[in-house]
Image 1 (cartoon, rainbow, N blue to C red):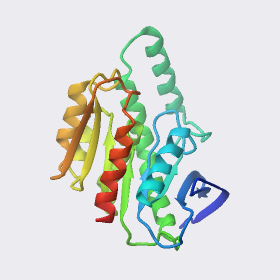
Image 2: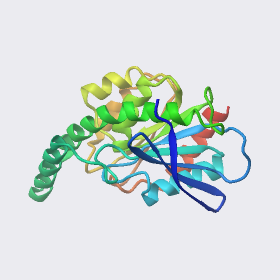
Image 3: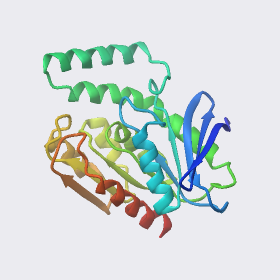
Image 4: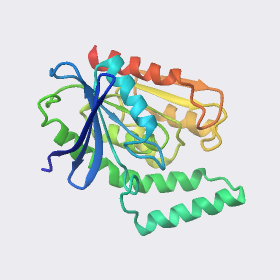
Length: 249
C-alpha cells in the first residue's frame, strides 16, 4: 500500500501545512500547530480548474483547523494541479470552451466531464485515506468527514456512498443525474447541502432533485440567492459547525 511522503512544510497562524504525495497523487495536509494528539480528519474536495493548493482550499482548511481542531487533507483531482489529462479530458474541455464561446448551456458537459474525473478520483481518495490513517496523529478508527461542493460534490458524493469511514458530509452546488442519484440513495450519514438559487451552471430544480435523492435521515438544505460562485462566506462557518457537531459529538 502506498504511504504518505511529505514534500514540504510551513507554519502560519497556528496551522501546519504539509505537501505530500501518495503514490503519484499530490496533496496537502493541514494540522493544528499545538499538540500532537489525535483529531478527526476532514477530506476537502476542490472545485473544477483548481487544486489542493488553491487559496480557497487553504482558507477553508484554516477554518477547519482553527475552529474545529481537525486535520484536513486535500488531493489534486485527475487532470488538475499539473496532473496529466487524458484524451477524453481534452475533448470534454474543448467542448466546454466551444459551448461557452457560443453562449450555450455548459451544465450537461460539466456533468459528463466530472463523472469521468470522479471514477478515477474515488479510488485515489480511498487509497489516500488508507495512507493518512497510518500517520500517528490521525490513526485508524477516528471520525472522518468530507467537505466539497461543485466538482467536489461530483467526487465526494460517490466517495461518501462507497466509503463507510466517512460519517458526515458537506456537499452541494451540483446537478442531478442518474448515477449520482443512485449513489445519493446509498448515503445515510448526516449531510449539509448548499444550493445557489440563481446558479447559472446548476438549474435550481436539478440541484433540489439531487438533495431529495439523498437517503440520509438527517439532511439540511442551505439555499442562498446568487450565482454559482457567489456562495456567502457564512456557509463555510456553517460547514465547520456541522462537521464539528458530527465528528466530535
